[in-house]
Each structure stands twice: as structure tokens, then as C-alpha cells.
Image 1 (cartoon, rainbow, N blue to C red):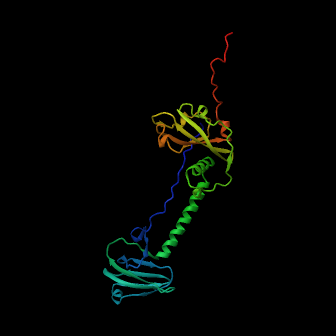
Image 2: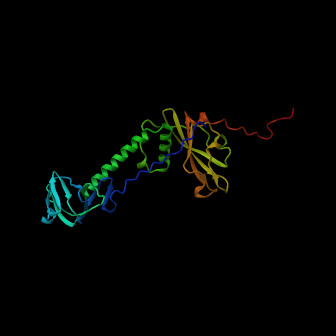
Image 3: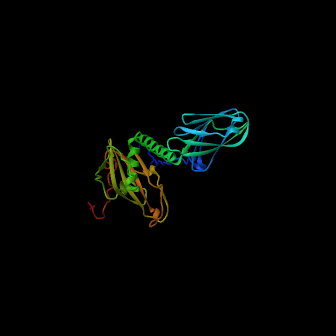
Length: 283
């Protein structure tokens, strides 16, 4: 076997970026306005930006001006504290729809604080999550298409056998192939294992073919599937599950994904000839 190609399962998960209503990132964080006052603590002597999606009008309590400089421009509030102070409430009105948000601002000396806080509404959060999901899906699709063809074929075959139809990702140029091999290729490819090996389906792309073969254990023990014991001349091989359980159990079957250059039939050794008693004659 020239190379072992392992089945790659890519798991996509969106980051839980909104735990505790905030996303912590280096010098900024995003907070969602859900009707409850948003607490923001700024560091004394450090300018902090509160950013909104659209122009806002800010109501500032007079006492706050005794402890901090507060300015507003184009949907951003700039706060620089001169000294520590307890929470003071800002009333922020978004001009395009009149939505009012409450921001409780306090200041502490000698702390590390984000220099920017992005204030989002629930609708904006949902839209942002959708954009992140779309961008992640696109990037992952591009990465998958840059994988070697044999790896893409194995992934495609795996999805066809184990995923619902709506979850099968398109693979441009792939075609279903005829197999033209025995109904049980155990004697040719898996002769060291007590299994049956039933070809299920094959797909081809750019001169490579992946053939899915169902392996069914015939003994009452466990069997580790060691690719080095496979006797076919393959480009690559992977298994849906790395071992087989005892005959008759749910774990007694697995699928081998056999990657060959050209049809699998060209990579299999000749079928062993079984001598039948009585075929030879004394001379």
C-alpha cells in the first residue's frame, strides 16, 4: 500500500460567543441589550468607546461630568474617567427607531478593562451569528476543496452512506462508478481476517476511485482493523469504525473505504483458486 489516507471528519461548531451576554476579545467585547441595564466598568485615565449600530442621543446624569469626560459622535460614546466613581446611568436613544437602552457606567483605578464595548440588539446579534455561520461554512468548504482528491472522495462516500441526504456536500466532478468485482472480495483483499467483504458502491474523480465495502465479522471475538494486513494494492484505505465486535452484535460491521487509482478491480490480486478434490488424476 503506497499511502494510508485517514478519514477526516470535520466538525463545525459555532462559538458560544454570547455566554453571559458578552463576548470577551482582547481589547473589545460585545454585549447584547435584552431589556436589562448593561454594566460597563471603565479604567480611570483610559478612553473607552461604547459603539452602537446607528446614531444615538445620550442622556448623561450631571454628576457624571464631575468625574468623567463624555462625548458622542456618529453612534459612538467616548468616556474618559478622571477618577473612580460608582455606577451612573446613561440613557441612550437609537435615533432611527427610538429604542432606549440603559447603560450603567462605573470607573475603577488600576484595573484592566476593554477599550471598546459594542452594544448590540437581539436582532443585530442574530444577524451577526448568521453572518459568522455563513462565513465559516464558506471557509470550510474552500478548505475541503483544497484537500487531496482521495480525501475528498472518502469524505463524500462516508457522507453518502452515513449522513442524511440533505447533509451531503456537493463534490464537483464526482461520478458514480460501476464496480465489476466479486460480491465478496474477502479472499482478495481481506484474506487475513474472518470477515465477509461486500462491495456497496463506488465513486470516481480525477482518476481516483473510492469503493465502499461492508465488512462483517464472522467470529465471536473482537477484531482490530489493521490497514497493513489488507492485501490489495491500494492508494489509501480508511474505516468507518476501527474494529469489529463479535458476530451478531451491532458493532460486528464496519465500512472500508478503499481508494485506488482507477477501478478497484485493477488493484485486487487474482482470486485464489481453490482446488477441488478429485480434479487431479494419477498418472
